[in-house]
Image 1 (cartoon, rainbow, N blue to C red):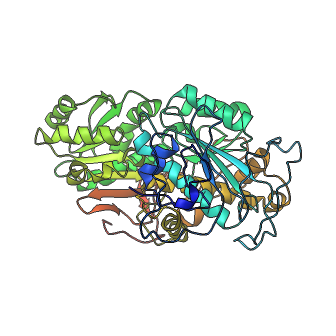
Image 2: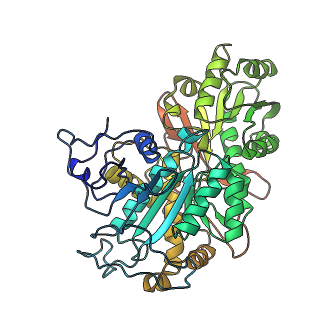
Image 3: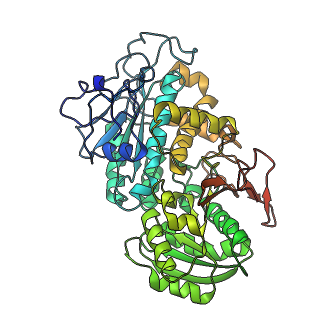
Length: 502
């Protein structure tokens, strides 16, 4: 089991300690990060034998015992003790925040003479319950970003204090988390929202309070339908199209595409309604579309229907564990279709499944494949994960969490003057977001564009990932495939091809 440095044990006696953004560093792997952050598992605080030295100090992170839900607080003053709680002030800039003591050493970024008042950010996501194991990497990815940005001096000289809450895909808990983060604890934005099942609750709260949700799972159409949701990359449905296109290209025999879609979430209904377009874009005949549940133990009947219909490209609109069961059910019938999924549906653990690898599984994503290394943005991601969470594993969700933080960082760079000269408020963040045009996040995104008062521009592009017996590869490297006015796919000549480039 990964262990935490022994010197951290005195920070929060009697509490579970999560060091995803801490002065003590961490060697926790991805699954441990998610479990401990929810208070679901004890942590071994004894010193590891022969452990390497921890990275430079950048703040502290503890479980917040004051809230009904276990929370990760990735707190963030550079070179100084973390404040005991969030700075309480008008998140829209109506009053002066309390002063923060100067740092004991210069900020890492070099431009900040001293840290300003902390900026409080919140995250609500499912790290337990349905899809929790699949999207839990969003928590780790955002926490890695918070730790990294603080080591560079903070957001325009403001240390980040990140509060992360589990909502277990329960709309009522999403709403409760929102109220706690925004109204009680001073968060000026929600970052890295992981709510593929409970997106309606998050969207309602964001539109009511006019508070941005900056990046996240980006699976539902809501991400390009609300003026207060800000996706990091390609449109959700385009990503699903992309997975079908790439899977159909390698399927044996005449192309025919079928779908398993879950009944638990509105995104599954959107997936079902979009699937005829996915098949058309893949130049595949449309096969059966079967309603399924994430919780059913066996999918043999549905597999038999697909096999009898001659489906050789099967889209699994399921989470990771259900997809494993579906592949096994089909294999029991000696049926091995090429599989397609959304990138949100395949966790690092599910990616190790022999069945999903044997069948060959293709994923579409709105951001660059995490396996690539040839753009500045993805290199920065790999450097940060190696520094702050070297035990891994990382997956596409980890990158989505990181990308959410980078999108916020890009927005505040648009309003650097007022941000570095005063408080970071909700209205200032919105102003910065609305100024972003074709923002590629140094090669992570195909280009995000936002306009005041309007939903995000739906970017008709995707990146392809392929899972086979060799592991993950990038279908076209870091090059996005976009669709022209005639809906024909065109691979952009940016980035580099990957090992599975076809």
